[in-house]
Length: 316
Image (tube, rainbow, N blue to C red; front, side):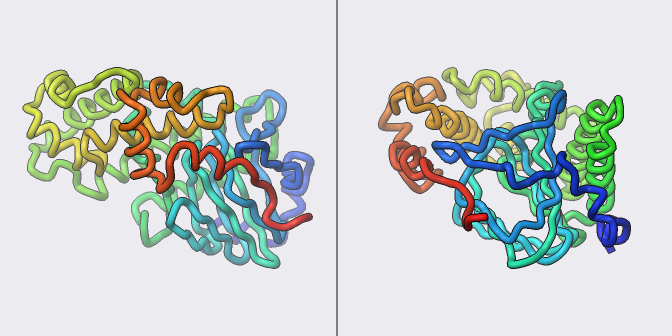
């Protein structure tokens, strides 16, 4: 049984403080939620027991949802996720999502600003795991589920204790969680099975460096030949290994990174669609429109207008 339920079933009052006032969450124009973090903190954690959900919205914070009592549902794109008590659901920053709650229930909500952590060397490899939501259960992540759950317990407890070094402890535990996810990706899926063991680490380092380069230069004209040459592979060998490591082709990942940048830029009304396309690294407005619709199911203009009104699914 998950440790939250073991330890906290009769002790929810410990988390009903000003720090967990979930009712103050509001969604602004363009469906962006401006998260109100506590003073001197990059994070916000709530015990949410409201029988209401949220219409489509996004925020720059990483969101982690852990149901405690009863279910909780999320819709992201065309995918629906049904969360049961003990499940861990991670929504990447900037991901437009909708949340639905039952008539009664409890769940912990973590909103974490990972902007500082994302600048640490090596994080680009972890960032590739955050190209989609992560639904973590004992069945889907058997090697690391217990560790990640305990890390979240530690983060939550540290947050509500609000000790002198809570912020440092939380940052450290978040890094621990990301490392666990990265190790699970490398070991659980047996990456590079044809590569000799002593070469495995070298390959992981090379592709993490490649992802860091893409993250820093996606607005430029990056070619597969150039990237493969920098990594020390032929473009055919590089393409095969890159797909194994990221589940994306090189071109698809570069496009994904540019689309994510465009989504954020589209939230700024003063930016024209052409400005957004150029700043996100697309060579032409026609290419941008075609690829954006291919990835998001609507044009950039439709996306901008579609996400202009959001808020609580039900009134409080």
